[in-house]
Length: 115
Length: 115
Image 1 (spheres, each protein chain N blue to C red):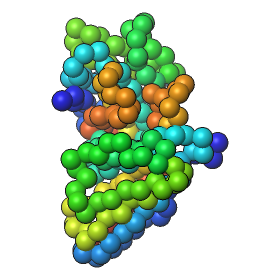
Image 2 (cartoon, one colour):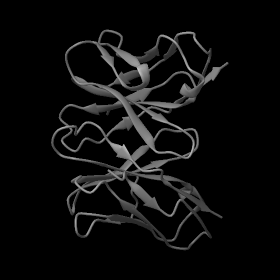
Image 3 (cartoon, chains in turn green, blue):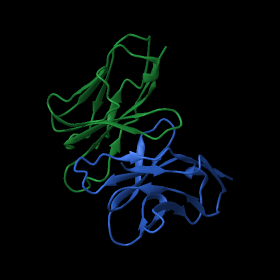
Image 4 (cartoon, rainbow over the protein chains, first blue to last red):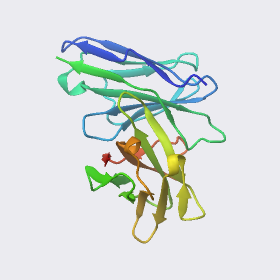
């Protein structure tokens, strides 16, 4: 179990630029989640996949955000035309469907700073 | 809509003393409740969960939590705090009929254990 890994750890970008983050879940986990955490707040759900299917999207996920999990393994989260309000920690988590499915395994996150 | 509240931004306790981190929830029906801990530069880690059954649940690192339905609370406790317990603690809920296992988090409580 190598854990959930996220890349990059930090990203600094200028307003209006596009950014893409990657998440590699634990290999046998079917479910993959994206959360956003701003300073002093708890994580907020953005979207989740079961295998390659995106099954739920939060209202927080504006049209500028898109997430993919093309082969049911790693996932990418792209933000187009970034705004300063997008500055946050973007967390990825994974879980199996069966068994300990109430427990999420989180990565260390990607810290995005939009200047 | 479900919500989770953590009324204390920070809890200070001396090493060796008991600690309590408070959490209240608002969920339709019976909730699934969780505690996660976040250490600096690390992802959230699962501590414990309440699904059904005994109201007192035990988790990792000597932590326990008590589910109180009448008070809609799920306070985290530990009989004797360690300096290494200093971290950010998040309470979370999930509605029972939420097949996707999306969690709603509280705002977090910073626990400071002083020697």
